Image (cartoon, rainbow over the protein chains, first blue to last red):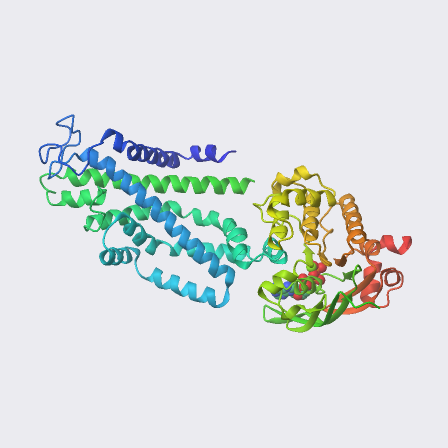
Amino acid sequence: MSLLRRFLRTPEAVAGALILAALVAMALAAPLLFPRDPLSIAGPALLPPFQDWSLPLGTDRLGRDVLAELFHGARTSIAVGLAAAATSIAIGATVGTLAGFAGGLTDEVLMRITDAFQTVPGFLLALAFVSVVGPSLAVVVIAIALGAWTGPARVARAEVLSIRERDYVASARVIGMHPLEIAFREVLPNALPPVLALSSIIVAAAILVEAALSFLGLGDPNRVTWGGMIAEGRAVLRSAPFLSIIPGIALVLTVLGVYLAGEGFVEASAARKRQS
Amino acid sequence: MTAPLLAATNLRKRFDSRGRAVAALDDVSFEVAPGETLALVGPSGSGKTTAARALMRLTELDGGEICFDSEDLLALKGARLRAVRARLQMVFQDPRAAFNPRATVARVLDDPLRIHGIVPRAERPEAIAQLLQRVGLSPDLATRAIHEISGGQRQRVAIARAIATRPRLIVLDEAVSALDVSVRGQILELLLDLQRSQDIAYLFISHDLGVVRAIAHRVAIMDKGRIVETGKAAEVIANPQSSTGRALVAAAPKLRHGA
Ligand SMILES: Nc1ncnc2c1ncn2[C@@H]1O[C@H](COP(=O)(O)OP(=O)(O)OP(=O)(O)O)[C@@H](O)[C@H]1O
Ligand SMILES: [Mg+2]
């Protein structure tokens, strides 16, 4: 049975996929539906939702269109989530492959570094990094990756340790292939599947960390972010709770969607592997 | 007598498995002349694979010397060791495990040609087609993924990869054991053919004395990490002197009557 059919048979996975599809659609449609700068003023301040149909979700404290902010915020969340996951998997897979393949002192040193990073909570690491370097989208991505690469590194290393004993790695040595080429061309691609299985968790966590950084005012100031919206709304939490609740719901749904779809995909591919 | 192509002297290797030390190689010495086939036979666990992997520098020895093509093989490392590998090749037992599962036939054969700079890039597809033909496969197979071809075809590809760099010695560790009987005969024919046309020497590891009889000039019988008997293949098989040799011959019923 195909991967897709298996995936579609799990209701949670389908729910996750639908949420993700909606999110991606929002992100793609944002510049078309809301071509104006979402950070510019669109109407009277603190307009409640469902009052004015040109501003369906109302406006915030400065009179900015909440729906436009929500759509543009989706772009930021997706961009940061994907970029941070890609960066941490790239770093983790490289470090894990080098450690597992080289063994000995290299392994020892790289794994001690991994341990060191792992003992510091990822969010603190990101917080410290952004406070020192200054907030911008790229810095936020690197900051999140800094705390997230250790998981992929460990998984990659464990996988490489088992792969490096296989005959095909011995064959590569026998034909005189350079060890670095063996590590990155023969071993790493075959070690990737379990590492990639971590991506949904990493994307979800990255989106949350980005929101938390933005909430603390450490997000990219030139971009709308859901975390930033929640922080903005906090000042008027009693009089206009929807300003915090709307981006909050978006955030929860997104993280849930990424997680469910990711789990569904991993389940489906594991089930297919079991069968073949 | 001509100088040997390969001289392994006093090879020693111990493994510690679960606290117990196992002498996988206990003072093992043997020689292979250019263009000759030496068969290494022995019961399971006698140290044949360990010897093969030590020759290929896949397993580090505890002691001993290996002289290959008048070079001290154990003294080489890095780029110089990789360069020598062009002349010293190996074919593994299990043709399913010996290739990167993501590789295509073309890539498998391209690697040695590229790494040792044997054929310029533009001419490699042609060289790959020739290699495939030389091992009796269709050049059309080049674009196939390794997992799409049969075990016998894979073992031919493994042989093609081994001969791509025109080696002087190929170590074959149970290279035909995993194959069907009919395919086994064809591969042995191919090996004999390559030996005649390119003067390749083989270190042929097997536990099948029938196969050994068909392909080997000389035999070395191993038991518990030691070589207990060596001699011309036909003579050793007809009249084994060691108890291990007699046991191996006795276990191969066809030989007792046929030869
Ligand atoms: N990596 C290893 N770790 C521990 N012990 C090992 C290792 N490799 C081999 N041995 C041991 O060394 C001895 C020789 O093993 P080897 O694989 O060389 O035998 P073999 O003659 O090739 O056997 P077979 O015919 O079953 O392939 C055995 O006792 C084996 O258990
Ligand atoms: Mg063996």
